[in-house]
Amino acid sequence: MEGRREREESGTRRGTMATQAVKVRNEEGQGGSGPLPGAGLLLPVKTKWLELRRFLHEVRVETRQVTWPSVDDVRSTTAVVIVTVFFFGVFLFLVDYGFSHVVQWILGFFKA
Image (cartoon, one colour):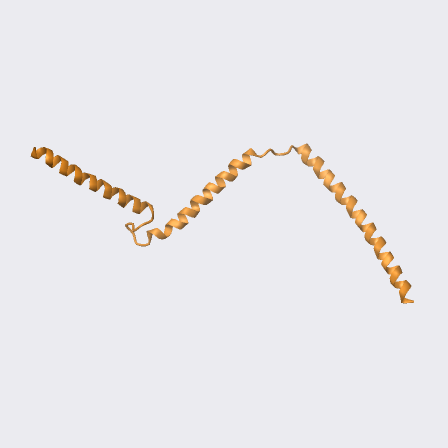
């Protein structure tokens, strides 16, 4: 009977010691009081570093999923953009030139 009681008591002690060990490990993992004073100050830096690594990994994964245009597509759309810019540049130049002459004529008409 006594052997059984001793085993039960030692099991209870062992159980509380295991619980205390888990608590200590959890406190250390959460940046609690560690072996070095001020060790918890590095936790925000480590967290930011891990966030940056995760972000860059996600960027790389998303970049691989992008459907990139072919060389012919890039050339054709570039040509369309250049022609369109040239056309609107000439159009706006002519509209500005016409408005400036109309305004000059109106100002000259009322000046006299």
